[in-house]
Every structure is written in structure tokens, then in C-alpha cells.
View 1: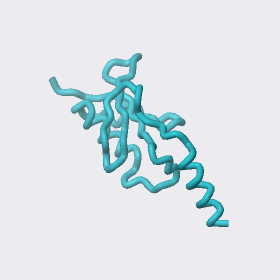
View 2: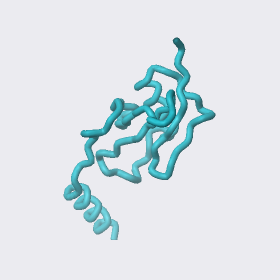
View 3: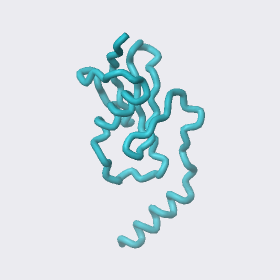
View 4: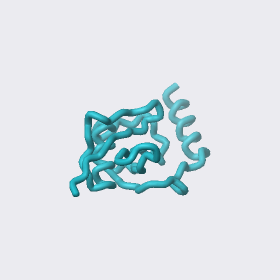
Amino acid sequence: MMKQTALAAALCAVLAPAAGAKGVEGKQVTVLGRDWVVAPVEDAPGRYSATRMNLEHLAFRPPAVLTARQAVRAIRTATGCRVNLDTMVRNITGTYYAQVICRN
């Protein structure tokens, strides 16, 4: 059974088209080997979203660090500002939203 599951997963990975970050607005950054796209939220000034791009289609691999910490690092790297952790939320698709604190 394990061989069949592994074979099916490998076949799906080969046949599925790669979901690249082409056409995605925002800045692409790498945090701990994971690619993130950080973009400002249109409705709220000073609010950013961070979405991890799972290009390898490995849904169940263990993260090197919790994804919330990776999202904070991605937003900090892309914007150069600190993240207000009290405003950070995650939606059902795995995108993190947070307000940033920038020094002038």
C-alpha cells in the first residue's frame, strides 16, 4: 500500500503543472528555503499579505520553522519594517495578513 501511495504521489507531482509566481504582484523573498510572495493589501495602508509558494507540491512536508514565523520574516525582509504581531491573522488558504511598523 505504501508503494502505491508513493507512486501515485510521484505521478501527480510529475503530471501537475508547476504553479509559478509569474503574474503575481508583490515581492518574492526566500525564507529558510521557502519562497514567499509579499504584497501590500489594497484596502488598508500599511497592511501586507504573505503567501508561501509551494512550488514543489509537497503539502505534508514538515516546515523548518512554524509558518507564522516564516511569514513574519518574509514581511520583514520584503518591507524592511517590523511586523505588529497583534494584528497578524491567517485565512483558510494559508495567507498571512499583518500591519507593519516602519520608522521614518
